[in-house]
Structure formats: C-alpha cells, structure tokens
Image (tube, rainbow, N blue to C red; front, side, top):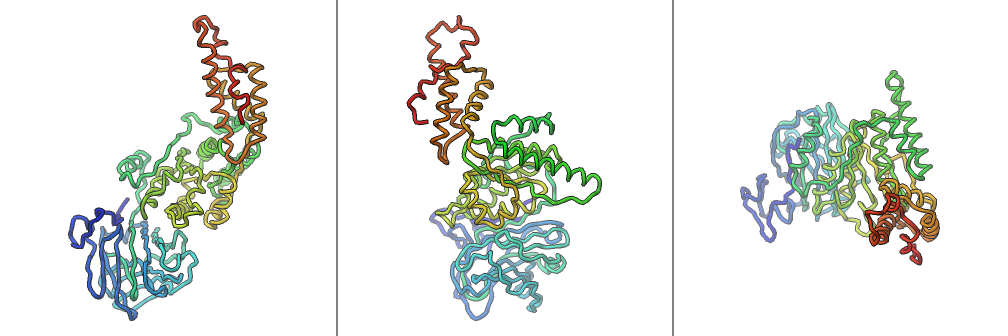
Length: 507
C-alpha cells in the first residue's frame, strides 16, 4: 500500500517554479530563497541549501496520512550531498511537531550516522555518530531506509541494516510530519521519498492489477511463465533427466531437492530445520539452457512447498533500470512483487553494475534487490545468470550478494555429441528426421564448431539457427517436385544436401 510518494519530477523542462502552491508542486513542499536558506524544486529534485554556519540546523517537512502506528511500513529516501563540510550531518526527520520536537536519522560525508530524538530541544541519542563503511563519502548519493515490523524498527544505509531499535522508543511521536534536516552550512538534493506499507497481503490478481495501474516509467519489463497445471515432482525429475548434457548441474539440483525434501519432512515432524537460501546463480556460456533450468527450479520449489506459485518472472538490465534516480528502485520493486511466490530470473545480471560506468543506476537496482532478497527470502527465489568470468567478478566484488547466494551452478558448453542430440530433438519436436548423409555432415560441423568455440559461442541457439536454415534448404529442394505426390517421410527428411550451406563455413 503506497502511503506517500514523491520523485520531484513535476517540473517541465526549461521552466522553474518557485510558488509553493503551483500545480507543479503538488505536495506543497515549502519553497523559499533568502540569506538563511533556499528550498526549491529544481532539476528533478528538491534542492535544500542551508546557508548559515555555526552548528545550526534547518528543517523542512511535509505530512501524509498517519502511519506511525501501523504494524509494518517502510520508508525509502534517496539523498545526495552536493556541497558543504563532510563532518556535518544531513538526512531524514519524522514525528515532527516543531523545530524542537522530532526524530532524525542522519549521515555525514565522512562516513558516520546518528539516530536522535529531540524533545523540547533536549537530545536523546539511540546511535551517536557511528562509523558505517557503506556510506558513500563526500559529495555522493546515499539511500536511507527505515522499516517498522511489529515492535521493532530497522534502519538501513544503502540497503545494509545498521540499527534495530524498539518501536516504542522511535515511533512514539508528538507530531505527524516528516521531512529533511541539514546541520550547519550545506547543500543537499532529495531525489525521492517513498513511504509504503505491505501490511495487506494481496492476491495475484490484485497485484497484477496494481502493476497495470503503475506509470509506464515505473513498471519493469519482464516475461512471466507459469508452471504446468498438472505438475508433479515426478514430472519435474523426468524433465530434468531429459535435459541434454548438464550432468554436474543435474547432480547439484538433485542434491538440493533431496535436502529440501528432508527439511520439509523434519518440519512436519516438529524437528529442527536448517534455514536455507533459495537464491542461486547460473553461470556459463550463452545458449546452454539457463532459462530452462530457472523454470525447473521454480517448479521444484513449488512442489516441495517452498514457493506458493513456482512461476518465473524473467527480466534483465533493460527491464529494471530506469532513467532517473528513484525510478530504478520502483522498477525493481515492481519486478519483485510480480515474482512473489516464485522465481525472479535476471539474465546477464553482471550488466547491472558495468565497470565502465560506476555511477550507473544499476547500483541502485542492486541495492534494492539485495534488500528484497533478504526481506522476502521465504517468498521469492532470485536466480541470477550470465557469463562465467563476469558473474564470478560480480559476486566477489559484492559481499552482500555473495552472502545471500550459496549455490553456484556452472553450466559448460555442449559437447559435439550433445549439439547433435539437440539438433535431433529439434527435428523430433517439429516432425522432421535426418538421414545418414545429414548425420555425417552434422558430426563434422559440430566438432569443428566446438573446437573453434569462444565465450560467445551460441551453443543451443547456434543449433537452432542451423536447424531453421536446414528446413528452409529442404523446402527449396523438394518444392520443385510435385509435393502432393511425395510421401510424408520425404516431406519430413533432412539430407546432407540440405546442409551444403555449412560446407566451407567457419562454424
């Protein structure tokens, strides 16, 4: 349930609005510009410039429906320090009654944070300038998060939990307003503020309707696959065994299935169970069936009772990365919500944080994803996939990701005989067959292709392309005959002649 949402995106290009109640300032944020302070909606952010120095602070606030007494809610704030001394604090305030009564969660440009209560101007510190290595120091963007669940409130910095405090201590508020604070002379940009409550569990149909009602720029692009209606564990095992190649991956999945079955049985008997992560990584060359395996994993988790639906939501960088700060977070949230009860499959996941663009919005996507992988670990399985070297580098460079994934399934190139088996399967699935001459040509072609393979060799995709070209060539060969007089076997037979286009090609 969305309680309050602000992205400061209302200003039209080339125009600047300073009137507090103008249509472009729909939330009626305070605006002013004088010797002490400047507050403006500008350049798709709320620009907060505190101009006084001397250990002074300045507040600006807003209000929404009362939410502090809810059983559960979440607050997400994206801030950017753009100038000022790094040793002074800036951040979020809530429970604001006036300038002497409020709570604050602030950080500093030198990597410290503080959680404090001001009551009649008297300070009570719950965390007083603690070090946090997840803070981006200097003039940088940082994401603050506050989550209340029951009797406790969690505080996050860049998706990392830093404090847990009793709700009665930090949510017993005198005022309903919330906003931002700057201590001493400094300028910050507020890029977004989102307050939501997941307290009401929605049906799949309700979630789907909500997704359709979202603004296009905040919706993720994905493809969704449901498991078969008559699915069983036996059918999943049979489909897994029927996969061509991947013997090592199959063995790992069978071990995972056995472990989960035993844990389920222990739970039913009231015995102790071991908490396990459902998230996993598939890494290896393209065209080796990573998407197929992700769908089998979803089906497997459902049949073993670990996921409710077992569906798979497939997306990639283009599907969840937005065009401005805050948009990406909403797209990731949308993808996660669609995948609740199933698998969120992110292909080429290493593209989320490319090396050549360190300030890319993909970092925001990964931060939100890591938080949801932890918060929703019992309701969703995140499967990330991509090239081996790039995926290993991604995991090694990100401790948060490495700590949430403990199963790594390497999928190697198909061997020549496996490529041939895939070609035969395409034939069977589409009502074709091959003769001995075609068999000999394909053996030679696949052996050559495997010998000359590189990291981008297409494997199964390469075989599909050859199959599609071969049936085109077969059609060219037989169409000059009287088709109505040809036997079914002749209409369906691929010969070596239909594969001549391969002879001499650099496979």
